[in-house]
Image 1 (spheres, rainbow, N blue to C red):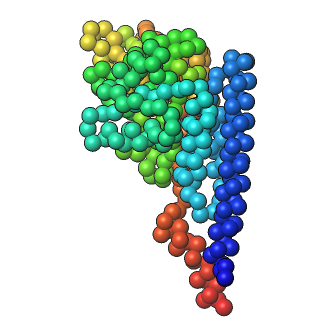
Image 2: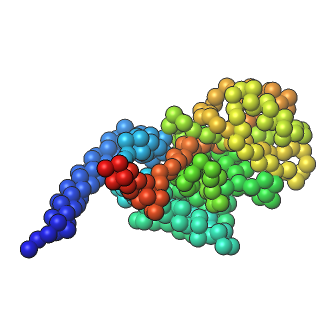
Image 3: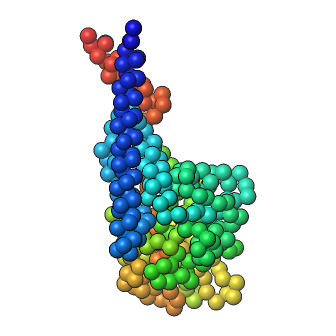
Length: 307
């Protein structure tokens, strides 16, 4: 005789069928949108739109399913349909140390399990694949200060609508506010125009022909409401100029007048350009595992005690 578990399983089977039907319907709609974008010559990949979608879903989410799982499910959908339909490929710069697997896993989480990915020995080579059209995206390690050959300096030579620019940060979300800078972070670079998602960070590259202190750069940026999150510097071997990459809490559009204003405020000849940016990651602040189970059980215990 069927019991309560069998009834619940039948309900789950029915929901699975409904979910599958909706997934197939969604895939068809995404294909149609992609076709319309190509007809109108609209950029197919839109990281700002994807960030807004994720934030909307997380804002309405409730129940025991972890927020991180929701994000990974939707990223799988985006990768399997929105990206796969255009034949895109990913070059992942995998460091030759214990951290290599972490970068590969972050890329898989973001681009899905079906998008073709290739391991590359170093970030400059990964950028070269994007430049030559052999890859659409390059996943490169987070910058470090005083690197011998920082990959981001090669983005400074890019210009125009098809310039390579930073478009996303990995991992896509943070598991707590206290861990806003996880152990492994990476950036995604592509020939994609980065537009604002409404809550973003940008990377500004400065090429200065005279010595300017890092504190002065941070201070002058602040006068333009550009709050520094990080600053990475590189002394060019010819000794005539220095390069800096400044991460700021703000969206900076290409050609924004404040780029020239900042350069003037630093009283140095050179250039200041935006190398792209990324949506500020969501925080998975919900409780999972035993903590979540204990929290759900607490109201029941209180009810039992009061009765």
